[in-house]
Image (tube, rainbow, N blue to C red; front, side, top):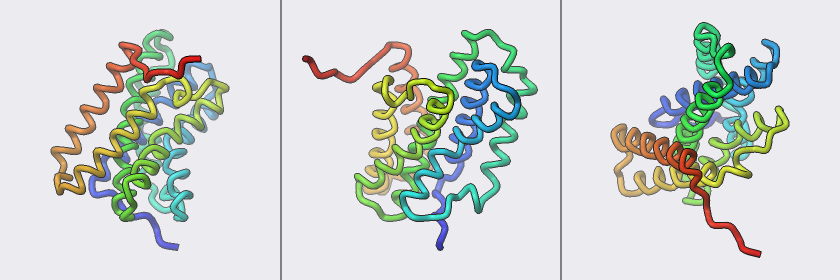
Length: 208
């Protein structure tokens, strides 16, 4: 069975992996899990979205072929341990979690969309792969710790993932897909996600 194509700008995969590993670590620390529990939570958060994406396109999950993401995960956890993030105040842990989770969301939506483009999918397919890659790990993480998944109560969570993936598609169609535009897209998406969180921006709800 052939493997998935490697994204043109693969660093977004590693950025997302590191960020989601941090977010899993921070949730585990907040929930007072033991070392094994924190490791499992961080690992599943970091690889969950990518595994779901690969299964959707009938490919062997990249994590079973390429060990680089595992090195990124373990290095991230080592940094978190050395910095003793688990000993920080709960308020700081929550803020750090929001930032790490937002970085992972935006980075993985871009990485997933690149996979969709490499597979020559249409706009819906590209957006769907970007969405699943971005929210899959967080969904697994939140369900494991019995929290309401962000995707169900943070309106600008899934929206950001879809927006980033759609913009990757548009940039590629207009031959504007390059490192500069990708970094601008990443910074813009991260800024929008954090502003939306701080300002509590939400999509309109249906009125009864």
